Image (cartoon, rainbow, N blue to C red; front, top):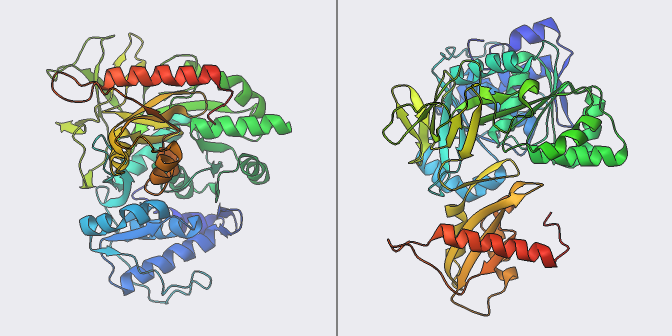
Length: 482
């Protein structure tokens, strides 16, 4: 596994007609995938493309082909979903440029390749190949860079931890702009497994795709898994083909286990904790599923809990989680994250937790004020900034409250400068500026806005008040907040 995509020729030679990737409308076999990737490499060479190339994820099959072409040619693919590109495109181009994005001259139907196609130098293990977007405690999107080694090692260690074999069929039920789903797809293509991606997440349709493809591995967030299990149970479906559930993006709750086991009776559940910057950190497999923690350190990963003085803490004490592994990202190439710090090969994102005497990891909280909702990492500051752009808002604070479906539900406390402002106005304002998943589900109007002695909003007091309001609303309302 010298570099990402290095296996495509061998796989195509072994079994050219075997399906490599499908989005439900378009499918490519291994030979066709190699032709698509090669034609894209030729285009990059002919146009003397910059070292960084833009790959949008609107068409998943093309996006995967372009990413692999960039990787194999020694370039880094900047992978962005269309919504992120619309919102952050200008900043992205200014920060990361020069950025190649002119794919218009290639015919993906004919994929005609010149006989003497230019052969780029093979990338090395430390060559950057992928740049993705993530948020941070500053509320500003950042772009992180990963090397070939960080993902090829992740492939190898994932195979070991999850017991993956040589003949898997992977289904990815979410957009490729999310690093969890992108990793699942590229891992599968690199290993020669069939990869199925979906155009939109409609639970029953996803289950039908899994049945048709005889999927053996599902890469999913807890929210997606819950919705799939609910839909499958309602229809009386039992997917005996599925052997592995790889779950990440938020905490998977015990309440869903029985339902998931009914719909996927043969599937082992593997929950893992990690980030875009670290890849895998810990893994909770079948033997640990009833633990309340996030499992044990992933194979190849060292984990240390440190105190404020930077020294390792004894077992059982809460502190800052630091990791060291060959899977870590290179750096941020756009923006910065003050919670992310390195020290002699070790890295922390500011997450807090502890390790027990059996080596199990327990998280007390993610770094900064991050809210994990529906598998997405969302930061309160970004939403507060948008709310404060509205003339009728004097103060704003955003929180995550417990939610059985999403893991956390985003809600906001606001102090109004305009008493006539309606919640519908706030929602429309947010929808025009934020991805839908980041828009608060409810807004609570506070007449009093407490401050700390330092003159900052007393977020602990305001947050407790918001939770009281949410509980009171739940007591007098029949709504599910779904």
